[in-house]
Length: 193
Image: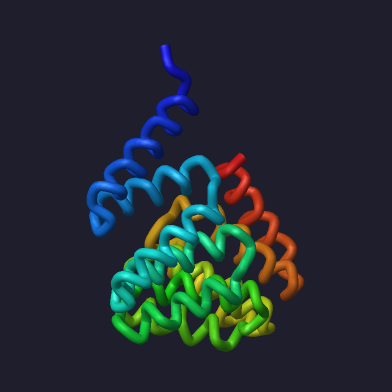
């Protein structure tokens, strides 16, 4: 039986052949990139997205996807550049706003991250992750009441959000509410041992 690695290499060879036959095959390009991402070939997948963008510079999803790879690869500034381009084409792309907010927080553009999280929440008020991410950013900015309010909302939307309990516990600790902090830490541990 072929190994998983053998299947992956065969798939990449098949996609390469398909692209030689039809260089503009979006399906082959997409599958080729996904396979490269899955095996950790971030440089190869970024190069492939470069080609997709060269062929179709109005493909906001390609900019977002390349930005995601750059973010995962430790290049938050490069990801922000790609997210900015994607948002020029589709300013209400909630996923891109959330991802850009994360990358901005990683570059210490905390106010910029808050703006992106706010825009995301205007579009999608039901995502508990957006609230705890904004709450975490508010905590860093010393907006402790805002951080607790966001974590409360996250927990209301998803009572199993270990991250929201953890962040709220950190804020309560900052506010010297040791019992409240301990309760939240324990709940976070129960949810995510």
